[in-house]
Amino acid sequence: MNPIPAHVAIIMDGNGRWAVQRGLPRIDGHGAGVETCDRIVTESSAMGIRYLTLYAFSDENWSRPVEEISALMDLLGQYLVRKTPKMIANRIRFETIGEIDRLPPSVQSTLQATKDATAAGTGMTLIMALSYGARSEICRAVSRLLAEGAREATQETIGARLDTAAYPDPDLLIRTSGEYRISNFLLWQAAYTELYFTETLWPDFSPSELRAAVEVYRKRERRFGGVR
Ligand code: FPP
Image 1 (spheres, rainbow, N blue to C red):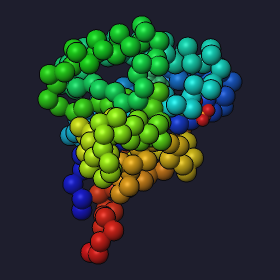
Image 2 (cartoon, rainbow, N blue to C red):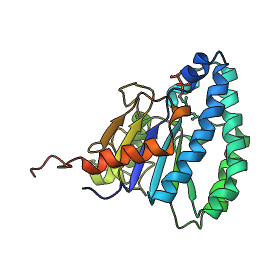
Image 3 (cartoon, rainbow, N blue to C red):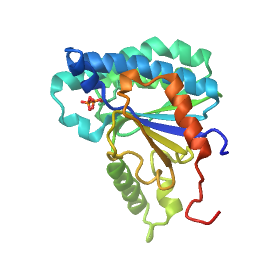
């Protein structure tokens, strides 16, 4: 059996469908999704997972209607303000990946305040991917290398310039809502990540299903391209 994953990454999909199934506006699905975030963060931290990366807003999500983007930004700001004391109490350190400077200035300040308030956390690191796209992340890393005058690129020099440079690669990637895609998430880092897909829509994803996904992961044989 593998030990529990050090790093779990989640594509939190299906909020819109969850709402539509109930005759509610899509944004209510995001509201319910925020509550799931809270439960899953708490459970992950209690399980001893060291890093949890949540795909909260992708590069491509900028193409959604402005009302939905603005509602998502409001939810994010409220979530941070409401949950920072709990993060501090649970020794969670909050960090982000993605192009944070594209977010509304008020959200950027709230993000910074939560990072500062939780910086001393020695427990789980909660990494929120915001305005994140893996292809753009890789391009930014290569551009930095070129700007530094590098004449060649290696896995180490690119890896060290990704937004995730400080974190181990994810061991387990979960995607909810029955979509079987990676959707531009952690393309470089997920080279040998174990994938777990579930039909459950994100607002219904429970701590017990997280534990079930981890149990499936623990039984997987990881060979990293080698032999047993
Ligand atoms: C996918 O649902 C989810 C997102 C676009 C982003 C995830 C956002 C949340 C879980 C809520 C915000 C989180 C925080 C912490 C503020 P979808 O809209 O693509 O669903 P659909 O595929 O059913 O339409």
